[in-house]
Amino acid sequence: MKNVVTKSIIKILLRARMWFLSIVMRYDKNRWVRPKVRIKKDILAEWLDSSPLSKRDVSELLGVTRRTINRWLTGTRSPRASDQKKLIDLTGLAFWELFEER
Image (spheres, helix red, strand yellow):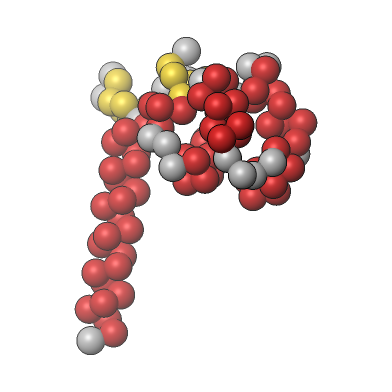
């Protein structure tokens, strides 16, 4: 019984991962590529304003510095792929609601 449950959970997680990749990745010239994206600064700023979390709390939850959060808000930097996933999980927004292709 334990193996069946474990296998079911693994299948669900793999499907979720494939779903995420299918949204984030695109197929181009016989290979999967991650599009270059930038964060929608106004959406992130609006979420931060409406959230009970401070920039400091968000930076601690994401494992980045407050300076990095400020760089995202000013548009001087874009989040890495690992930080993009964490941001999506934290905000509850869809990938394309929070990011746009460059």
